[in-house]
Length: 76
Image (cartoon, rainbow, N blue to C red):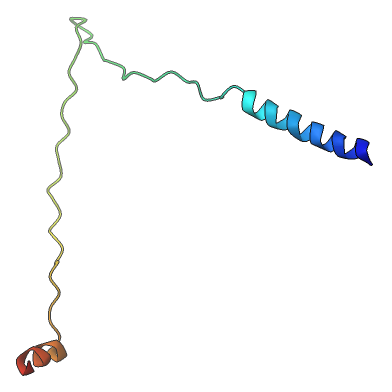
């Protein structure tokens, strides 16, 4: 019985140590944006700025008072 318990504890400890000492898998280097060159001159070419879409109309923030709220305000 003692062997069984010590065996289980040993396996758990080994598993935890392996998990702790495992190297992280996501060690990817950051990618740089590729710069395009001109076919004729060989110089770097600036990317054309994208045209921005017009802003969407603003949503109504203030809430309209209901008839009950207006009547309560008049009475007080």
